[in-house]
Length: 322
Ligand SMILES: Cc1cc2nc3c(=O)[nH]c(=O)nc-3n(C[C@H](O)[C@H](O)[C@H](O)COP(=O)(O)OP(=O)(O)OC[C@H]3O[C@@H](n4cnc5c(N)ncnc54)[C@H](O)[C@@H]3O)c2cc1C
Ligand code: SF4
Image (cartoon, rainbow, N blue to C red; front, side):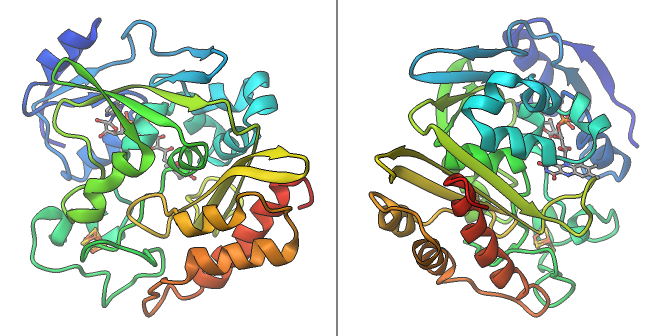
């Protein structure tokens, strides 16, 4: 690990000033410390943001709930109101890593965590994401990689919270050069879709301050499949959210994680589900639409039937049947 300075920020303005153009914010440190140890990032200063005031709260308003960027994953998991009103978010939080990690991992850090591609994580491998010439995964070990991508890099977004926030149509509020910018989950990762060097759309010094979740979708569900039951990232994850009026879905949204460099959403599938009474045939047709353009590679084709089953099950869970 390269030497660095360390400072604690007590305001967002001082955090931005301290991080300047070569520093990194540190929250729970679960992802950042691994990156530092492998020389994958080499900031000149770590700016501890855990003392920033007001960012560790979950607040309720009629139209939306606000989750501060310093709220921990365990806080979400243990919040009885979240469990009641956003059960999908509660389920996603409970599936993240292990209890010890959830106790310190923050919402901001979870959304901004970097790629888990093993070629990227290896300190001696210089792939496209590290300014090299090649994506080694394309013709190599791509078992954990994407079925959809907008560029040559096939490393998927693996944040469980991003998947469920996408289904809930949540907005990340990012402090960028002194001004608040509102980004949908699609926008928060759009740059990773376009540019192999990017993990998300955050620029140097951008600070996620909170996430706002609209209250309109009163039902939500999340499911993931992993190699290990606990302490593991998802091979595929799926979240669904909707309002249910007279037994019919209203404004449904389905999002998948670990299969694309953005949370994977297909608008035609959401439109197809709108106004439908959910049954197995409808859920199956939605899954067909969502995966229609999947482009499996040599070792990850298993993700297609896995995602198909997960979409069906998550939708039926939304209805209370899975
Ligand atoms: C074995 C294992 C299994 C895991 N399984 C899962 C899983 O199933 N699902 C899942 O989602 N995650 C999983 N994780 C990842 C873990 O949840 C993340 O590493 C953690 O949430 C990161 O949060 P943190 O607060 O520790 O971030 P940090 O390590 O502090 O920061 C991570 C990155 O985000 C940046 N950052 C932090 N806060 C902000 C902010 N407010 N604004 C802008 N940038 C910021 C940092 O500069 C850094 O680049 C797993 C991790 C392990 C080790
Ligand atoms: S998938 Fe992306 S991170 Fe992995 S080897 Fe290819 S370019 Fe690098």
